[in-house]
Amino acid sequence: MEASKFVRHGKRLGRKARLLFFPLFLICPLFLSAQVMLAQTDPAPAPSQQPADASPAPPAQAQQPAVAPPAPPAQTPEERARIIRDAQARINARRQARIQQIIRETYGAKFEGYFGGGYLRFHPGDTKQHINEADWNIGITDYLRPRLGVTADFRGYYGTAYIGNNPYAVFEPGISQYSILFGPQYRVYERPKWAATIQALAGFGHGNFDTGTGGLPASLIGLYNDGTVFSFSVGAPLDYNLSPSLALRLTPLYLFTNYGSSVQNNLGFNAGVVYRWGKQ
Image (cartoon, rainbow, N blue to C red):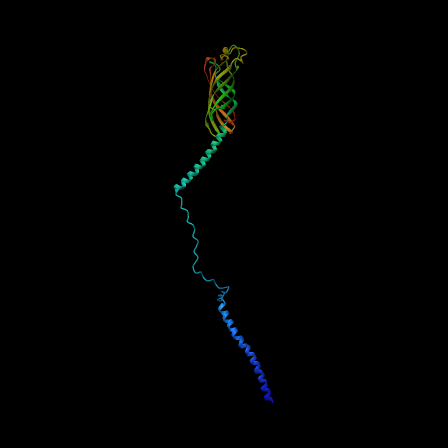
């Protein structure tokens, strides 16, 4: 009885085992085929990463250092001297251009007017000593060329003659002369601040020698008689420019007169202000 139960139970286990092994028998070949195909299509495995603390591998070739550009060739002393000379020449050329521009602006005026006063050493009579006279002076110049002009000049001289002992009791009479002169004026030197000019003027002068004698003829006390005579003057005006249109002027001069049919060689100077205007 027990044996028959054991036999029937064994038969059931055998049938179940066959049912289990049959699907496995079909699945195993398919699984092996899939593994082969995957092995053929997968890429090569990535290299293993180095540990974080591992030192990097040295490069195959050391990096070459950067090559500096070649230094410019050193200048010779001759080249340095030439460069300095060229720079100095350019500076001088610019300076000369500025100077010429200032000169054109200063002396390019058409007209020049001046006025002032001065001093003259005058001989009032053949037997009298020289006296000092003060004067006023005014004039105008029209420049026909950049340096050449025509001048009209007007002057008045005033002084006191010393007579000495005489029966008429006239000892220090006042005298005066007036001149009207015309002539050329030429500027011989012109710089931004300074200018030098020469002038030669001729005209006539009138002398009053008996205005202070109380009606006594001047010839009775040794003075020249009143009269109008030829006059000639040579001067050398020197200008100091305050601006292109304004300057100070000093003019040393010689004045020739012939009162009383005698020759008077008189020296003096005028000083004053010059004003320029207009364009040539």
